[in-house]
Amino acid sequence: MNMDITKNKLSYMYGNTIEEGTFRINCSSISDYFSNTTQWYNEKVMGEEQPKKYGTALVIGTVLHYVAECHIKGGLTVEDNEELSNYIELMALNDSDIDEVEVRDQVRTMWPVLESYIDREPLALAEPFVTIPTNVAGINMSGSIDGLRILGNLEIDTYGGALTDSNGLKLYEIANQKMLDGSDYTLKTMKGLNVEIIDWKTSSSKTIPKTLTKKYRLQLQAYALILKEAYGINVVKCTNVYITKSDMNRGVGKTGKPLKGYPSILGTVSIDMDDVAFEIMDGIGKLIAESVKTFIKQPELRHIIAQDNRLKGNTTTLPFYKVDVVKDLVI
Image 1 (cartoon, rainbow, N blue to C red):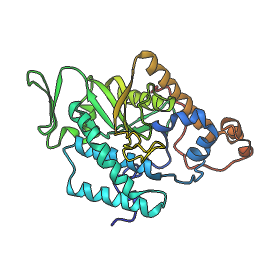
Image 2 (tube, helix red, strand yellow):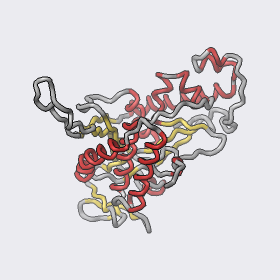
Image 3 (spheres, rainbow, N blue to C red):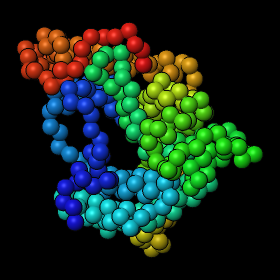
Image 4 (cartoon, rainbow, N blue to C red):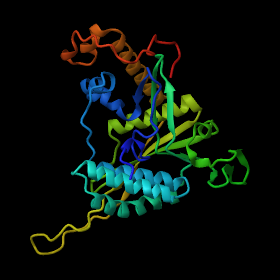
């Protein structure tokens, strides 16, 4: 069994590298810049080590994300199943709070619910990594998108590698590769298409939320901006797909009757993208990039920018030597 979690395909660190000397604004942590400013700067910019928190729920979510990705790309292979088994076992060995049996049981009950949704509403891409330079040299905004669905009167020929309309007309072909590999080349061929961003969210709640949290909304809007500016893809809608954990064996109540069980259910929450949403996210990206640049280049202001007086007088040289002048280029 591979004991290095960073080399397992289910690890968030697998294949996720950035150019030396640059700084990355992660789409999933944009909300933290506003709500947990001090921690965001200390962790993301100063490099302060944070205790890694996993837990059973996180492992369940990671496994379901990976199974969904493999399913969209054509199905689980023997190698994929080995990666899954190794990941679950390794995480349980490294953290006694992770219940390996619960992980496997929940995935068995939750996956068929998600699989049915994917089969009803096919996706065009799974897990493309997207990135775009900001208005500050050396600072990029990036992240991995769970899935993209093409909107309109189009059909995806997943194994022929071609996108066709209802008359079978091929709009483009990809030589010697599947449509669903999530590569940068594939994204570039989607220029001008209307798409919906899909993001999987596992939940311990018994119900589906009615609205998106600020954290999830900003994450989706950042993805949309990158797809629009870097690839010319028109993001019309962003959707979180929630899959709840199953809770069927709840024991017996005070009356002696079995308590009601809750099977895994699926529900969606969506937001529409318009010019105002893109303008706001464009401004947020610029704001964060310029703030980080100032933090790096002007140490005397660090405690003010990070809202942390402990940084007053801190002149630590940070490794982001490619973070330089603000450019006229907009994101």
